[in-house]
Length: 300
Image (tube, rainbow, N blue to C red; front, side):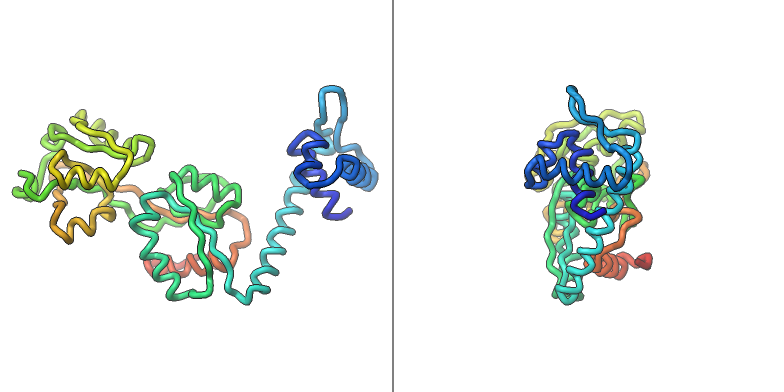
């Protein structure tokens, strides 16, 4: 039994087609067929039923498939380990990140990471948290920074609480008073951003649980645009505090506490594949995150 047979078997099992498997492997169809037949002879069982309606796995094929997938995964991890040695520990961190995190949080993290591990190259892909989870599960990235998500195939490492605060223009009556009540906030023109994001639903739920319906004056698909609209006095907004730190320093926006409502936040976490050998760049990234957010990374 050799790796080429296993690769051919897995491709046919996933494609349910010898011709499509041959295309994926960049082989001729007779070559794929020969590899499958050789594997079947070695195992003493047919792995596929071939008929007029196409190809399907036999019971023996169904039983063999998870083991074949494990073999390919172990080989991939072995190759990755050798590549790390070949690169003299420089390595490459492939990271996924939710959009807001990548814009307002990740730059500071990567600044610390680059200072500590200057030889590790970094590439970042962005998307919504659910999209980043998909990238991790498909091995497009090695780890992801997302709002805390639970999935049986990933480890979740909580990092910090993403505090959602009320931001108003500096000349707003709430800013002059230094506080507001939720009922008052609900009557003000509220600017919401990114209907498809978790923030949108979180803010609506915040008011709904209090038995209130906010006065939504504007919806935007950009957080930066939302902040500019608030600066111009077109409304108020509830935004992650980390996204308005610069505006607070400049004095163009004011954070106003809502005195009669519980604080609103969500957990931001690092996710990576469970039960997998963690590449050295991921271990290095965890080490830096542990220093920033004061936790002890689990051993490899």
